[in-house]
Length: 246
Picture 1 (cartoon, rainbow, N blue to C red):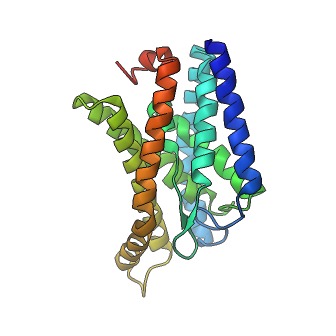
Picture 2 (picture 1 turned 60 degrees about the vertical axis):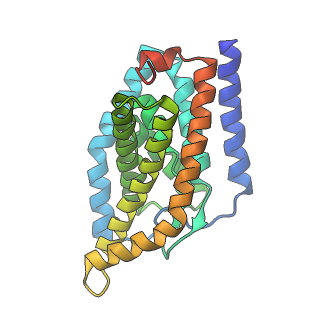
C-alpha cells in the first residue's frame, strides 16, 4: 500500500510538472535576466554558496538515513516548481507567484530547500525563460534561503505554542511566502534606489508586491495544508521520526 502511494506521488508530481511546463505562457518570473547590476548579481550568488553547501550535505544525510525520504524530496521539489509557476504580473522586472518552499522546509529543514530551489530556478531559467542566470543568486536567496528559514522557524515556534500541525503549516507557508517578497523588494530597492533613496524604493516595491502577494500567500498556505494532510493520512511515520508531528 505504501509502495503504491509512493509511486503515485512521484508519478503525479512528474505529470503535474510536465503539464505546467508545456501549457504556461513564457513570461518574466522572479527577478528577470539582466535586471540587477553585475556587482549585485555576483554578491547575491556568493552569499548563497555556504547555504548550498550545507543543503547538499543535509539532503545526503536524509537520503542515507532513509531512502524513502527521496520520495518526499521529489514531492517537495515538484510542489515548489508547480506553485512558483503560477505567476501574476506585479512590478517591472518581476512578478508575484506562490513559492511552495514552506512545505519542504517543514519536512526537511530550510537548508535542504536551497538545493531544491536552485534546481527549480535553473530549470525555469534555462528551459522556460523564467527568471535568469544573472539573477539566479538573488532569486535563490529570497526564495530558497530566506523563505524556507522563516517558514521552518515559524512552524517550530507555533508548534511549541501548542498550535495544531495544520494551522502551523498554514502560518509557516504564508509567512515564508511573504518574507520571500519582502526580501525581493529589498534586493530591488538596493539595486535601483528611487532618486538615490533606497528606503523609499523598498517601500514602493513592497506596496506594489502586496497587492498580489498577500492573496497568493493565503492560497499557498491553504494548498500546503492540503498536501501536508494527504502525506500525513497515508504515511506519517517519516513525519513522526523527523518530529514534524508528535
